Amino acid sequence: MAVSASQRFFERLWYRPTVWWLWLFLPLQLLLRFVVWLRRSFYRVELFKSTKVDKPVVVIGNINVGGTGKTPLSIYLIEWLMAKGYKPGLVTRGYGGSCDSFPLLVLDETSAALCGDEPFLIYQRTRATVVVDPVRSRGAHKLVELGCDIILCDDGLQHYALQRDLEIAVVDGGRGLGNGWLMPMGPLREPKSRLNDVDIIITNGQDMVLDPQPVKPLAHQEKIQKHSVYAVAAIGNPKRFFDTLKAEGYSVEAHSFPDHHKFSLSDFEGMQGPILMTEKDAVKCYPFADNRMYYLPVNTVLNDSCAEAVQQKLLQLLR
Image (cartoon, rainbow, N blue to C red; front, side):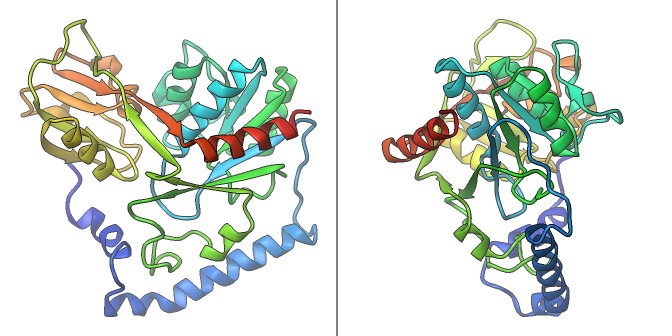
């Protein structure tokens, strides 16, 4: 039911001091490092095509595998821009979705199973214009056609085929960059020197915190009564969610699943309730939700200096 220890084996090792046998993967790590350098170099000298769209493009991403808080930050930026009177649009790959025809405009009748959990969550929270397309430049053009005046690209730091005006990298303050090596020797998609090139680095847990909101039910109106819960998470760093629940006073029986796991009712067999999950997971469970199920919404809060830096950069782009 829950993800086995073996499935998270490598991830746990990546965020510890390097054990000796991980050095066996050094040739593969060096090969990836070379491929990453070569690919980026080809974009720099325009051997690979990179598309420029008519509106400012802001990329939110990270350099390591797993969740760092990109989606909550995207929601924060969208809500701030909308409050200022702008029409932001978001393009994302839609990982885990079943759609095979792109670009896909996320609408009320779109399901999380079709578009992916993250774009569905972002649309439900913000009601902004959200487009799913693995070819980010094509999706960005669609957003421009739909009248958006600034484009956010979620998890697009390595997608160099779309030119960008601002890069924001999110780093997990608890796990950091792990052992600092590239996959499969470590958790990085690009060398940590890549962070020297981004415009803003936001450390989740320091510059940015996720503020828990009142727990909400999925299938009824009753408030959660017990503080002993089955905690369910299918996100990049489930420990962060479990730690949040404990800090809120819950006694937790933790059940972690692979990131973007496609839930079914059978995943919750043996859980007599209450079941408390992330909002990202909740959007996939509405079709079969029952009275055991609740989720914890969170709001993103940036500290004053970080918020000022981000907001000034955005306003400069929109002048």
